[in-house]
Amino acid sequence: MTRLPPFLADAVPGWVAARRFGVPASMVERATARRLAGDWRGACEAARFRVEIDPGHVRDRYGAEVADRLATDLRHLAPDLVRWHLPRELGGGMGRVLPDLPIVLARYGPAVLWVHTQAQAERPHRPRLRFGPLGDEAEAEEPVDIRYLWDTHRTADEVAGERWDDARYLWDARATDGLRRRLGGDDRTAFHHRDGRRLTTDELPTGHPGHDDPAALVEWTTLLLDAGRYREAWVAAGIGADLLVRAEEYPHVAQPLLPERNASVVALAAEVRHRREVSALVKVRSWAEAVFIQRSTAIVAVGRDFLHSATRVPRVAWQRFPDLELLRWGRIAPSALHPLVRTALFPDLADTGYHPAAEVAPPDAVRVRCRGAWHRIGWRDGRVDTVDHPPGEARRERTLRALGGAMSPCFTVTDAWLGGDAASAWTRTGRLPRALRTLRRDAVALIEHGDTDAFVALLDRGLDPAGVRTRRHRTPLHLVAHLDAPGVDVTALVRRLLDAGLDIDADDSFGRTPLGTVLFDGGSAGLVRTLLDAGADPGCLDHQGCSPLHLLRSPDAATILPWLRDAGLDLEARDQYGQTPLMVQASSLAPPEVLRAMLAAGAEPFVEADLIDDTIGDKLHRYRYDDVSFVPRVEESADG
Image 1 (cartoon, one colour):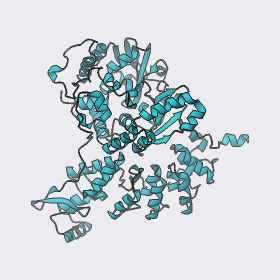
Image 2 (cartoon, one colour):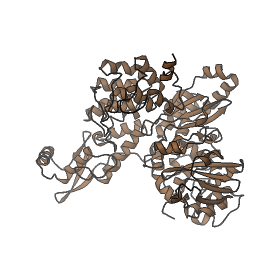
Image 3 (cartoon, one colour):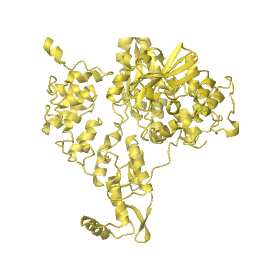
Image 4 (cartoon, helix red, strand yellow):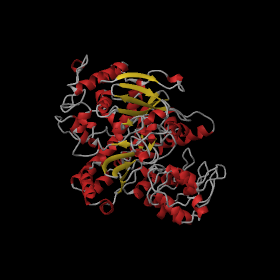
C-alpha cells in the first residue's frame, strides 16, 4: 500500500514538519550536555523551557522526601525529549504545539511536576515547567463540557489535559526503553528489526499472530486499520467493536468514523486490561467524540453524558505514535529521530548522530523562462536578484508596471518573492517558482520553531529575508520573538534584518507592526527595547484599534510598561469593541505578571466594555492554571 490512509494523510505533513524543525540538533546537543553535567536548569534553558520551580519552596512546603524525589527526577528530566513528544496540531502542516495544555509528568502526593504549553498555537513554543497542586479540570480523567467546546470552537484536543506519569519514557532519560514496549515489545519495535531496518512485506503478518508476539499484533491490527477493516482490527486486539454513533441528536453522523480516528487499538486493549472501563476522547471532524471500552466492547458516542461514565485514558496511551507512522511509511529515517528515541526503538542501530532534516539553503539560482531564453534568479549582497539582467533594467521594468505595462518574467518572480506569503504560489504580481516557495516555507518553519542558529546560517548563505513572510504577512521582524533566547544577540539580529530592508513598522494582516507582534508573543524586555531604540512607533494601532498596551503579553511587563507609558499610551484606551488593555489581556490569558504590572500602574479593574456586556472579572474564569486572585472583582468592591 502506497497511499496513506485518510487520517494519516491529514496528520503526516504536520508530523514531518515537527520532526524536521521542532527540535533542532543544536538544541538537543546543548540540552543533553547540560543534563549530563547535572545542570537541569541549564538543560531547560537550552530547550527553551521557562522554569517556574523553586526547590527551596518545595522543601519548605512539601517536606524533604518530596523535595528529594523531585530533585532526582529533575536531574533525569530531558526537556528536549519532552518537546519532541509534545502533542501537536494535526492540520495545517506546520507541526505547532497544541496550546494551553497541561501535561502531568510525575506525582508527589498532592503536588505534581507538570508542563504547561504556550497560551496560543502561533506564539513561541516556550513551555513552562511547574510544580504544585493542579486543579481537577486539568486531569486527563476530567470530563470536558462538549457544549462549551461547541460554543467556543475549541477542540477537545485543546482543552483536555495529559498525564505522562505512567509514561516516563516520554520525559525521563532513565526510562526511554518503555517506548519500545509501547510500540511493540521488549524485543523490537513494530514494523522494524532491532537495527532499524524496516520489515519487508513478506516479513509482515498475513493473519492474526496471537497475543504472544506483541510487535506482530501491533503490525497486524495496524494493517487492518490501513485497509479499512476497522471492526476486524478491534476484534483482533481483543475488543468487540460497535463503531456507530449512538446519539439521536446526531443522526446524520451515524456512520463508521474510524477512518479519521487516531487510535492504536492494541494500546487501548492493554489499558482496558487494567481497568473496568475506559474512554478515549478524540476529535472527529468538527466535534468531539468519546470511544468507550467496557472490558470487551466499544461504542462511539457524542454528548456530555457519556463523558462521565468512564475514566478517560491520556492521549499517549491510545493514539497512533507519530514516529512509528513516519518510519514505516518512509517519511523519516532513524537518523532523524531524537537520540533517546532512536536508541530506545532500535537498540542494535549504530549511532550515526542526530540529523533531523536536510540543511535549508537558498538555491544558487532558479531558472526562469524569460524573453525566449532561460534566465537565472539568484542572490546578490543578500537580496534576490535577476542575475542575467543589468541592474538598471529593474528600474525600467518597475516604471513600466507602474504605467500599466507587463513586466518581464524574471522581474515578475523577484516581485513575487517580495510580495507573497508562505501559503501561496501566486501573488498579485505572478507565480513564484517551486524552489523559492519551498525556501520561503522552510525559512518560516525555522523561525516559528525557534531554530535561531539555522536561520542565521540561512542569512549567511545569502537569503533575502524581505521575501520571508507567513500567510498573515508577518516578516522575520514580526516573528523575531521566536528567535530570541539566552545566548542570542537579538540586537545584532534585529539590526541585520533592518539592514536587509525590512520595515520596522510594516503591518501584518491584522495591522500589527513588529513591535505589536513581539509584545503579543511575550517578547523579552531586551527585545522590546531593541525595537524601540531602532525606531519602532509605539503609537501604531492594529485593525481592531488595539495599541501596544492591549497587545502586551510579556512576563517582563513590569519593565516594558513604563516605556510604553512614557510614549504616551493610555492605560484606559478603548479598542473598537470598547475594551481597555487590561480587559483584552485578561480575555487572552496574558501572564499574571502582565495583570500585576497593569494594576500597579493604575489600570482600572472595574470597567465594562462599550459594545460587549462583559467585565474583567467575567474574563478571569479563563485562567484555569494560574492564580489571578489578586485581580479585584466587582463583587469584592461592592462587599467592601
